[in-house]
Structures are given as structure tokens and as C-alpha cells.
Image (cartoon, rainbow, N blue to C red; front, top):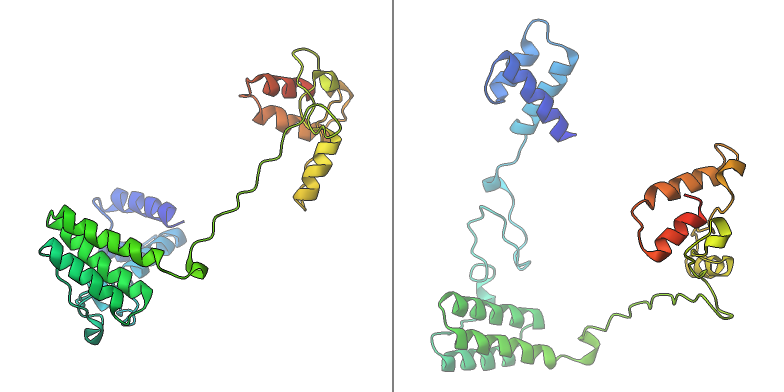
Length: 252
């Protein structure tokens, strides 16, 4: 809606006053003689949007310790977040990096804080072109992750196996596609057993078998006629063997 408002207002301002939209021009637009209700609505929208926008410098800083720093804030992340929590790090040489990693592993800080500290060292080393030092910090983070209790480790995602498409046998859930024929003789599409199986696995599904009745025998405006019309429209680009068989099955 904002985009539409902006476009209409810009056209109105440009036509009457020329140039870009400003608060001053918006006030003139709504105050002018003969201003329409639409002019006033657009002008008020723009004025409110411009005058009530909070200044980035006035935005309230987030709570200390959250690790967030708003744009325009004078607070420096990591160093000013909590002076008492500051952990000094060294990254001038590989030996400095190893000593820092060993130090971080043994300090009494939460796991996330330790990772944060080592990430700072890694990032600073990368900026300075110290690949070996950066690698030491990275390996230190990995060692911390590997030492975590098993309950904190990411559990593998159990992806649902796709349903097997069977066109023969007692578990047949799809009709075998044929190269000729229309309606039920074309093959393709799911069997009633396949539809029932799918609906059991997906409660609430409204999946149905194909409408194989000839179009001339369908009542105009009926649900079956509308389903057939919809399917034929969305399957126009189907060029595979099964796709063509499915379209013939629906008498497209």
C-alpha cells in the first residue's frame, strides 16, 4: 500500500508543483483550494511518515549482554558490552593464538561466549592476512564444539522418504502411463488406492482421482467440469510421457 500511495502522491506533486515530494509540498497540496479528500489523505500519510520517523541516533540501545548493537550506536561491541566480562586475546603470532585458545578453553565462561571470543580472534587474523593464526582459532572453535556433551549436539534431520510410485502389483498406487487413449484408457495419474493412501498420510488433504468423463458429458459449471478445466490449464507445459498421458486422462 505504501508503494501505491507514494506513486500517486509523486504524480500529483510533480504535476502541480514539479520536482520531488517534500513535506512542504505535501502541506501545500492538502491546504490548496480545491484539494480533494484523496489529496489530503495522501498528504497526511506522507507528512506523518516523515515527521514521526525515529532518528537512528535516538534509538534505544539494546540490553547489555545481548550482543546486539543498533546502527548509529556509540557503544563498541565486545569491548564495551561488559568491561568485567572482557577477555584479552593475542593474535600477533601462531604461538599467541595457541595460548589464547588454551586460555579460552579453561576460562569459566559459557560455551557461546567462548565461541564468540575465538571468532573475534579468527576474524581479526583474517583481516590482517594471517591465515595460519586464523586457522588456529578456527580449529580451537571446532575443538570446543567437539567437546560438548552429546545432548547439545545437533541431531540429524530425519527427512521423510518420498512415497514410492508403484504401477504394478498389490501395492499399485499409480496407473501405468500409456502412449495412446483418452480418459481412463490413457493411464497415468493416481489410483483410488493411491489417493486414499496419500490422504491417510496427509490428513485434511482434498486430493481426488482424475475426472475422466468426456467433457461433452460433464454438466457445465459443475465441480467436475471446473476441476477438469483447472487441471488442463495448469498442465499445459507437461511434455513428459506421464504428463501427456495425464492430460489425455483428463481429456485436455
